[in-house]
Length: 114
Image 1: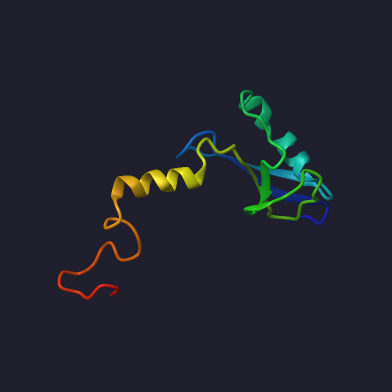
Image 2: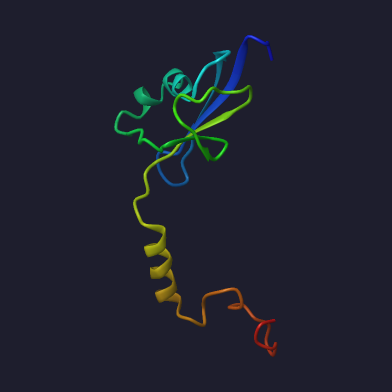
């Protein structure tokens, strides 16, 4: 790519199993905030709110003023609707102790732990 511009992908998942993605060409020195603004995300999803820790680059939390590099992927994250610890606890209570864990699917006649 040209040395004066960056190619950046902006990704947002408005709901589970849905993905919105756009590829942008931005000037050198652009930040995460610049990419989000240029993507049209706010106009496309006006009900969505960008939380303070709601953006990252390649899966790592990034401040909005972080400069981008060529071929970066900016991710806009939704807030959690369920606490992961609570969800795990509920799944475990439904499965029971014998139906959960590393050794739940044993071969017939196998020793425990194998």
